[in-house]
Length: 193
Length: 193
DNA sequence: CGTTCTATGTAGCAGTCGCTACATCATGGT
DNA sequence: ACCATGATGTAGCGACTGCTACATAGAACG
Image 1 (cartoon, rainbow over the protein chains, first blue to last red):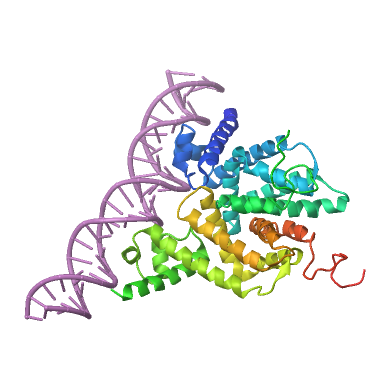
Image 2 (cartoon, helix red, strand yellow):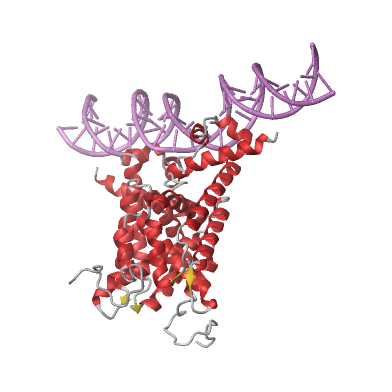
């Protein structure tokens, strides 16, 4: 009885691993159960149905992502610096599973399917808050609009990278400083460090 | 014998209708066949397998999208005007089925699955070319980087709208002119204040 | 006329999907 | 000692998946 919630949490964490590695299409009950070392029968013993099970799992994934993002980029920076910085963060290997899942969520949310729409929406809000908190801004009134614009652009680079067009991302960011706000712009990064 | 290619084309167009209305998840053989008034048996008579069938269908969808986009926005405009203009175009009703499909494609492409990766990549290139052609730019060298940045931001707004966050899109575009490049910026158009 | 080729129907295969009915076993409270 | 409860296995259902084997009708062609 008391172990029940604990067991649920164990399962959720293991399912989160699985969902992150194979995504939603590979997350039917039997593979999920196998990844937990149990049976589909038991998953539906601990969870009412697949929807509840997936909601819990995606919640856990979201929590991990939040933690991962909070750990990265502790500093604050103005728009022109923050944008390429976040884009590079999103291109890093540890983010890949999350972003693949994120796109699957977005596609399902686009068809207004629950629970995906709600979960994706919350994740989006979290993203925006995280971005806004890291944005250095002259007037407070600019913070949310600027963070929104920044978030949109970052999301766009995620899509472009997903379809194998890193070149477009690079060209887009070429419009902006590499890292520190450098005034003149030779595309070659400085060799010293 | 010769009617074969014509028949294939008929089927492709009808399947394109169906895919646009229900997306890839609802596009298994039997529903697709029903939408064409035929049987799964016949689809696989005209196409080698589901992959070939889907590739052809998505190609037709891409052609329609290209036509639709070329018809819209004949004019040329600078970055700050073109961005909100394209974003508004993407928010228009006729674009919705295409963008839902686009996100599904992006999600599959993100997992490097063929033929989706290739098709999505080509669509992305088309988008970029289309954007670049409509961008008014001071120096030709800026065209591609600027169009890339614009495209990324537009794609981002598509994602944000997909997850039901039109508010974020609005905030982001609030950073930019509504249509004509007007210098001062009271958010309420034209009226007194 | 007879044959051959194209188009189509009917049936079904082996697999997966989410989900459930039923049986069993162990444990712990009374 | 008995029984209730919780945990788990086994088996299966009905629907769906992509795909195929077989049969057949009709048209084309010799």
